[in-house]
Length: 254
Image (cartoon, rainbow, N blue to C red; front, side):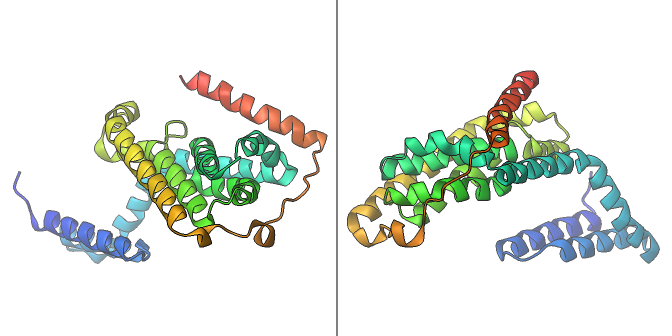
């Protein structure tokens, strides 16, 4: 099949959108302009071009309403856990292993990864940060490396795999026209490589920086204070039932 002007316009818009993303700017307006331009080039009608914008929104909605609903529900769940205080109880065992900087780095990272797998990284950030960050800083781990661990394990390892919610693989699979399990299976080698390289690099850079400068160690007592958490019966029940519900869901999915 020969490439037409419509194909070239599409490729140009893809490049433009990628450049805008690299500039960390919003891409909504450029996407709308691109859809309008392609619709107009295809039909020569401004009316059809406007219709193309709405048809695109409807089509994408039909593809992704399920994902949007799942993400909305897990965000609501994380907010509910915070509201009743169950988040602190769920994270309490992890605090006990944070006895030094190394354990704090891996502890907050692995916790972020697990929670991100279950509730996605964005709602996991306040959930993990509010509960574990004071304990992490108390070990002397620089705040910047706590953030590095959370971001790499959460938005990196967890989001790039997304084994449980499967939002990201579903989007990729829909665009490629293949099944979600096929996408996940094919991505595992590069996912493992990326995970090992990025985490190992960050960890060794952290160790190197800590040896070079003791000024990176934060004054934990001045910036972060441990708060006493009221452990109501509701919080205890929710803290126990939530992991059990997730385990049941995972077993059912498998």
